[in-house]
Length: 94
Image (cartoon, rainbow, N blue to C red):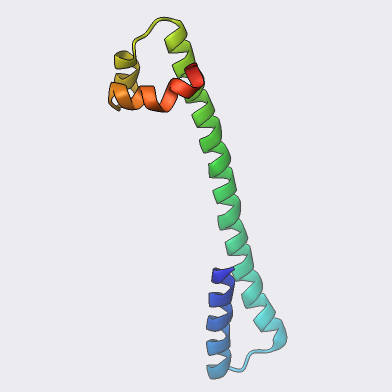
């Protein structure tokens, strides 16, 4: 929403200096809208991938605990302290 308002401000400033036809104004706004749409779609895609990756990590920790691995070993794989691993993943392994 803020980006759209910024784009409109830029278009308005350009209009002050250069006389644009209504179709040219719409074309400029349309290109900016497409860019914004692509950026937002990328955010949604990355969020979905991050959620899937987190679910896979949760499942890997569950399996490691079920296979008898210690929090120390799991923490080493995660690159965190054993206490940090326990605090974060105890909810999914309980």
